[in-house]
Length: 310
Image (cartoon, rainbow, N blue to C red; front, side):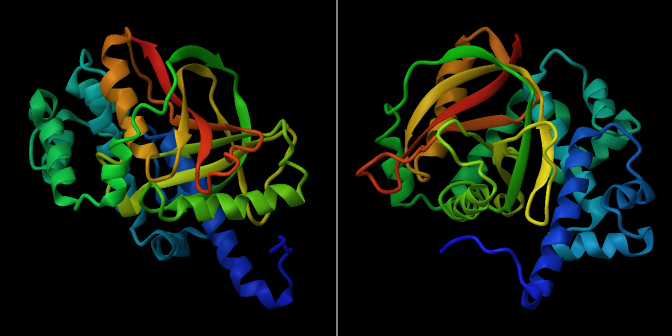
């Protein structure tokens, strides 16, 4: 079905899209300013909503309170940093993520994960991840993914420039449920804007670590690189993807298989690479038409892990 601009009969749907767009703008601001003073007044200003109403609007869109969301993101990002920055003190990590003191961070961390930050670093993170996986029932898709680990090329390390991107967002589990439908909607939008040609560069960005963040709260952005002067519209926001060095490996497979491919990069390549993950987001890079002819549901992309020296 071709993409259609909303008519007057779609005012209600368009209004919700506008609300979601503004809330996503706030989420992006929080992500980029975790160490700052993120007051209700400031975040409402970013959203262009009245502070009196914004807290309820945010909860209505995300099913989380504004400060519950902010607290969770700070804790979860700090938990990831504790693993990726092993030589940095717990206090430094806490301050970098907006906590006012070591004691405040310690209480919040233990309440969220059931252990101290030191225990998390000394094996608790691995146990947490293992327990979460044990609580998931492995299905046929998971078993099938394990059989396809070898469908990837060798890893190269390269530098990417800053990208200006337009994006649509999915909130929910990564993988085959929701993200393909997001890309279908986004592709229709791109076609109407002349952005889907053979030279198009598209990015899939997982904004959360699924080993730390609950699946239903994970955020994934379908993006296309646009000119600096490009402006968002009713359906998309615009943001920058920062430049930097990445480990890049080509992947060919299905949405069911891509999670295991990501895990393989972290498990098999990264430990012996001489690098550690940077806090920039991981990227899936799609160039031109990523679909594989004659193999429905199979696509090609580049899996890109942000790097900094070990």
